[in-house]
View (cartoon, protein in one colour):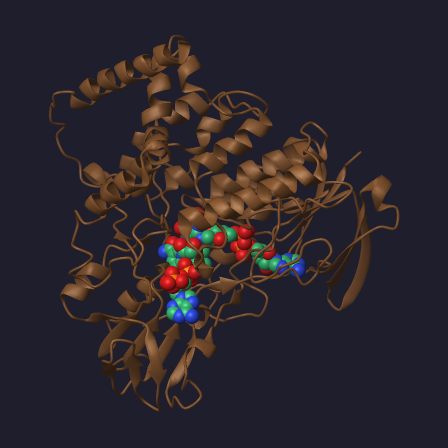
Length: 533
Ligand code: FAD
Ligand code: NAP
């Protein structure tokens, strides 16, 4: 029986894994290589090996109501998108509230995780750690690997002929911290992900000129959506997800184009994605279009060649006197402490059942948490992963046979390529609500708006048409939280609270939202009746 669980890493994945272990009555020990919690979200001036490194200005691109843990909303006065220091503050509050620090051994790095000789019967692991130069070996019943996947840079220098001749400075985005030292420079940023966009925009405030080179383009979206609400509260609803899953791809492509081009024409701005059928992660950046409009950032195509000071692009144009190249080309990952026979990383890919469990182990006592890039927030995602995993460890949920798991892995990968494409940046990409629901179904916590229709119609409407936040997964089943319903109905309050810094007289408005709700109710009713047929 699983009792002692090792958790590797005290970033968000590690913290939530600890909490889930405690919730399930397991005995966790967390090994964290550094001196503190927070992982990626703990900004440091230095770039340390073996640890994620962010720039000083990073702000979340998923909102607080969509990024908090399911039984612990963020404080009302926290802004909707959080500076890294503020998110770290939330993690500190969580760690204190659930008394998690006592389980963590800081400055303790995991060197190896190996199956015990009697693994086939015991499912146990031997973990070797090092702390203050002292190695120690401990036996655990199960392991949760929470070591992160934004640590190793993907630096594709081989795709940049002439880089060896380039006389300027070049580095990966993980080395970038702030604008100091880049004043008056001509800078080329490679890539059009969220790192590239953030860094290009920030540098353009100090540099002489910034160029951003993209090979496939991308949709660029504002964090602000309808009526000023955070984008993900509008985008990630069950209703929108149902539409995305059922509409023909051509219709979906057309709708996406209309939606994305409402703000500005991606074609005119040179950003338009090459393959508009793909649902790749969008870039969330409120400033990039305005920087382009002001000419402070210019979009260029793929780099064909570099010389000592010049970048030549595939359309034949060139930009001279380039001082700095920032490779914002994403990440790769590895598990140096794991044997390849347990988790093998090949071409930056791993074979894990539901992105979590190695399928070939005789005992399912090792799980990877957070090795995923959902279209929505990763925080509720890792929480559901950890809730499921701890219940698998306890034999409260069971996994299918190896062959079924392998078939699922292959199918999932084919679907991923179909939806998101083959690009390196999309290797860990998953849909959001579909994946959350899939895990929730395993645990027995998937809410069913249709069954609630008669019992609690207000809630049914919220569940179906409102933002799919983590509280939805605390309404029923194991781990049910009595505050979940109320958290769903008070989220608006928490969204608006940090904006209410100037008191205004409340205006009386005709409840248009009420009308929409009635229409929504009718739509659900029709859906319900159709289901009955
Ligand atoms: P990490 O935060 O990397 O934590 C891993 C921990 O494991 C670290 O503390 C590390 O020291 C420790 N560790 C590693 N190896 C060992 C070892 N051998 N022994 C002991 N300890 C070890 N996602 C969102 O949903 N919303 C966002 O707004 C968002 N913004 C992002 C911004 C940036 C710049 C980046 C790069 C990613 C962003 N992401 C975002 C995705 C990101 O992956 C998650 O936000 C999340 O922080 C990942 O947490 P983690 O705990 O899995 O990994
Ligand atoms: P990323 O999303 O993987 O993007 C990498 C970019 O580099 C892509 O545009 C990719 O282009 C390009 N690229 C890769 N290889 C290339 C090559 N050989 N030649 C030219 N271009 C190449 O990496 P990231 O931007 O660092 O983001 C990593 C994760 O962190 C993402 O989930 C992101 O959302 C998150 N993040 C969030 C924030 C925030 O919250 N503010 C900030 C930064 C990062 P293709 O698409 O064409 O392959």
